[in-house]
Amino acid sequence: AQSVTQPDIHITVSEGASLELRCNYSYGATPYLFWYVQSPGQGLQLLLKYFSGDTLVQGIKGFEAEFKRSQSSFNLRKPSVHWSDAAEYFCAVAPLNTNAGKSTFGDGTTLTVKP
Amino acid sequence: NAGVMQNPRHLVRRRGQEARLRCSPMKGHSHVYWYRQLPEEGLKFMVYLQKENIIDESGMPKERFSAEFPKEGPSILRIQQVVRGDSAAYFCASSDPHMNTEAFFGQGTRLTVV
Image (tube, rainbow over all chains, first blue to last red; front, side, top):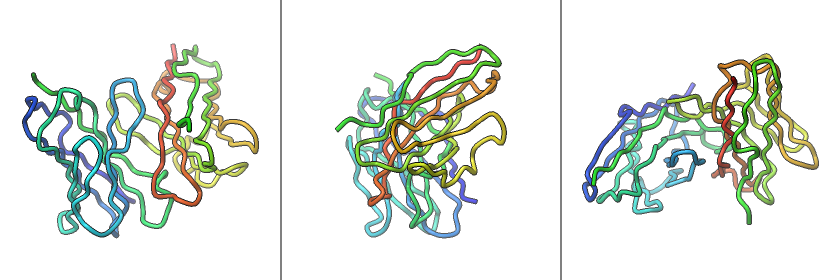
């Protein structure tokens, strides 16, 4: 069974600083990979996704993620964090050639942004 | 094009009552997924439905929980005889049957059992 690990439960960064959120997955083959953001009391918004091809994926709001097959990782990055980025971030995987709606989620990383 | 609509947004039930959560998928989407998010945890898959069919219910608790997606109307997640442990946020997602590479999430229903 696939699993997703987000090692950092909580991260605090200063506004304007760079950000990297870690995600490791366990699966027999390369799955679909996703990053979602959830603001308090809200639903999930898709930031970016990886299926195949270029291992560096660009998303919305200035986020990018890099797929590293050898490390089974899909870390999320942003060069300069804004206060509005404070939220919870979830990494998710879904088996290739199945419905992306049936995903396995990590437990999330809460991002706090200091002024 | 409205997004995935869930209602109610907040629901309070006493122990032993029934909870009904509704989800209207995006226009043109015939695949619906339900997830549960317990406090301080990620989302856990519960069930995947297509119109009038349950495709995968591997994440559904064996008792008290049921889901349907009728030919007409929203998808319903029903929890009978709720207990305190059912308190959680329940999210619905939908996807286009011709493009299953992305699912769109609703804003969730936050169920509180008192």
